[in-house]
Amino acid sequence: MNGTRTKNSVVVVLIALAAGALGVIASLLTTGPGPLLRSEPGQRAVNALLSANAPKPLPGVAVAQLGQAVPTMTLPVLDGSNLTLPAAYRSRLLLINVWASWCGPCVREMPELQRYSAQHAPNGAQVVGIALDDPIAVRAFLKRVTVSYPILLDTPGPADAGVRLGNASGVLPYSILVSPDGHLLKQRIGPFAEGEIEGWARD
Image (tube, rainbow, N blue to C red; front, side, top):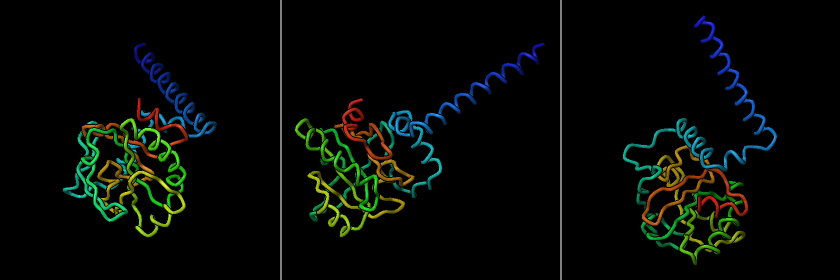
């Protein structure tokens, strides 16, 4: 008798799991992955999945972890100076966006990053872009799409700024939110939709 009940319970659980999986699949097929990927649990799940299948960081490379201090890095700015993150913007909410000029979704979200930067810089928020790209290509791109926030440069590779900021998979665009005291608050894989950054940075 107990064996029959156990088997029935297992069947019920399996049916429930299958129904849940079908619901997720149906949602993705009908509305796309947007709502799932734009939620914080969805972002954490995607990041965990991508990180699990990504190459391990090189020995000695410090990688940002949620809730912990963001590793210090000094990178060249387009104007030839250097900038140290996150220390340069200590006491400000910092949004760091890792991108490349050849990345379509990166290009599409840049007006939204510029809008957020222009509107919220007076309130203490700071946007910084890090281009994993050739400096000549970046300069040519920024002549067509102008932004007022700083653009830093790095060379793509196993220890680039994206990896050190917690993006082991290298998927672009990639953004993080850093607290005024330099701790990693949030990670974001994929582009921001119009008007989306405020909610993401606030929640």
